Image 1 (cartoon, rainbow, N blue to C red):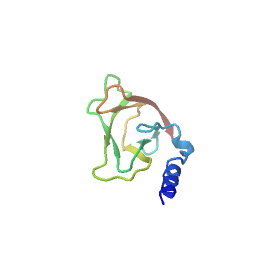
Image 2: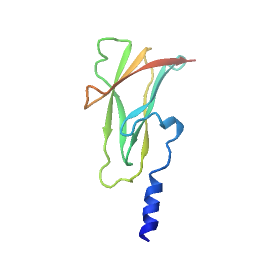
Image 3: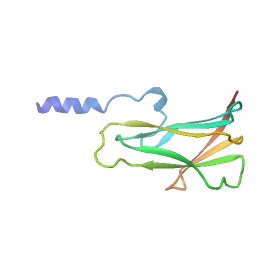
Image 4: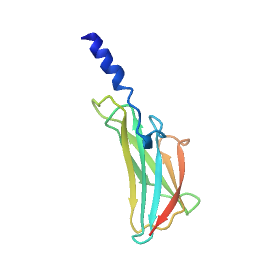
Length: 128
């Protein structure tokens, strides 16, 4: 029984990441996209974060001030750890922010609330 358990554990952690998740570092976030829809005047920002366990939640909140450049929207990323027991497998958490009647931003800056070094700047694409 002991050998069977060891084999199961070694296989459980050897599954490859999906192609779109391979660029996201474990414990980090990536695959960011920002799209402004001209017709509905809606801004959508999406991404994903990967963690060693399940139960994490990630939110994006608009900053009170947009910073020194009005063409850049600043969003704060907040990561909440699981409370209590969590499943022990690599999990990918989708992240999304949506703003209707938005002004036309050229870039989105995503900042971590707890770290001034964790910043990502992404270009906004437009669609009709």
